Amino acid sequence: MSDAEWDDRSGSMNRETVSELIGQGQHQGLLAYDGRRVIGWCHAAPRHTLGRLMHMLQNQGYDASDEHVGSVVCFVIAPPYRGRGVARKLLDSCGRFMANQGMTSIEAYPPNGNPRVPHYHGSQSMYLSAGFMTVAVLDEYTVMRKVL
Image 1 (cartoon, rainbow, N blue to C red):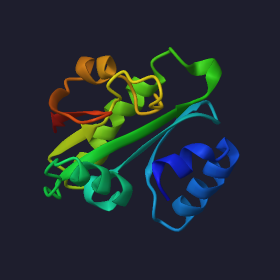
Image 2 (image 1 turned 60 degrees about the horizontal axis):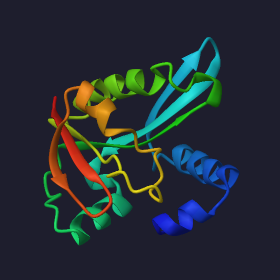
Image 3 (image 1 turned 120 degrees about the horizontal axis):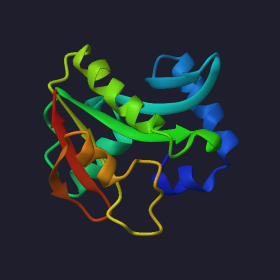
Image 4 (image 1 turned 90 degrees about the horizontal axis):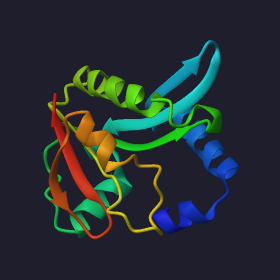
């Protein structure tokens, strides 16, 4: 499924699809809790396992051949918890999560400021404050990386 097809679907359809993929072991990430309530999700996985991402990067001339790079793809934070550091805490946990899977660095792909590009990828300022560096600027996204 393309990014455009994904973006045209309802949130509930996307949640159902992701839940099915998680149940099948084909999708991974981290959850944030407030007590027993899930308040956030971050999709993070070894980059080479993310077909749509790999396709996008390669189509834009980015060398994505290193299989020891983890990727932070998106965040979903419950509205009452937005702006309270939940995504940043998830991001910090992603580094440990990826290192435990043998990754030597982690990448993120925040948008370049184009208003039609969804912002669920996280902001460049969040990644910079977490120690990520810009390694490439693509058509719609900036590739940011942190050595683990």
